[in-house]
Amino acid sequence: MDTAHHPATRGRLRHLNLTMLLPTLAVTGVVLLAVDARSWWEAVLLALGAAMPVVAFVRWAAGELARVALPCLVVAAAVWVVGMLVGSHTAFYGISFVGPLVVPRLPRHRGAAALGLCAFVAGVGAVRLLIEQGDVRGVLLAYVLVPTAVTVVVTGLMFPNQRFYDVVADLEEAREREAELAVARERIRFASELHDIQGHTLHVVKLKVALAQKLVRGDVDRAAEELREVHALVSDTIAQTKELAYAQRRLNLAAELENAKNLFEAAGIRVRVDREAEVDPRAGELLGQVLRETTTNILRHARAEEVRITLSAAGIAIANDGVPSDPLPELSGLATLRRRVADGGGELTVAREGGRFLTAARFPGSGPVREDDR
Image 1 (cartoon, rainbow, N blue to C red):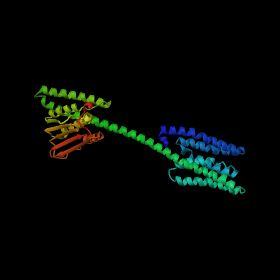
Image 2: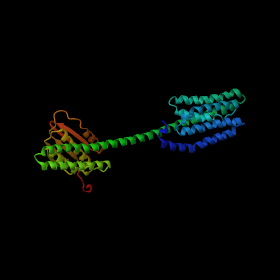
Image 3: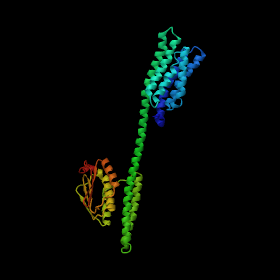
Image 4: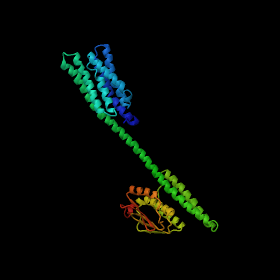
């Protein structure tokens, strides 16, 4: 993976590598040139070979080695071949550093390429035995063993170094994906909350407007009252939408309970509320969401005549009759609520028996509210 896709990480690593290693590469090249060059053209040859690791390293640190890999390899290899022929035993410097930079970044066959690189360095050095036969041991040491050993060591160091770059890039990409997922989850949450507010309100407005149409000729005052309630409901929904947009929305269970009773009674549905215990306020907001979603579902999908709401310290249960015998439509809002309740440490269950439907949310860890919780 190319760290060029992650500018911040690439910049820090590039600066660190350039600060620590680039001076070392440059100084090493200069020292070798000063020690081994015996004429001006040998100095030019060794300088060219010493420049290749610097150029390749700068591009490697920037994540752009591919642009210069082939030219640097060709020049460094040529310098080693010519240097070996003229008796410059330090001419291997370029290929011994450029090659290890390139090999670990190959897409495949990296092991074979590493072996080929080491074999090339050793093979070129071994050719010197045909030219200088008087000191076999010295030639083997200076032209074969040392260059090959340096190439093997540098290559061995570059493989884990490249792996480190890959891991850093993977971590950076994982952070980006996590941030994208967080944004997506927040958008889904916002859409779900907006659905809760707008969907609930629009259905209630539909019921009240329909009731007002029936009353407008027979009971003008009652029809006007219904329209005033519609106006107040719309105003309240606008306020809730603003609170949602600015992350200030909090559901109040008591207010939701009163709202549900008013809506059911307005639709001609009997409501019974049983309070077995005071609800744990830590679960109040989620329970308010459950009550609001269930109220909307009953008004939209059931022909209920009676609704029973039971409040306990551990949760809430809403049961209604009037459930049609045909299959119910998919209640996506309940599926979303189930995830929310589960995230809060609770459990949402729905059950259908005969013509009755039960929606219950329970928080097993909740207990009677202590005085210091209030």
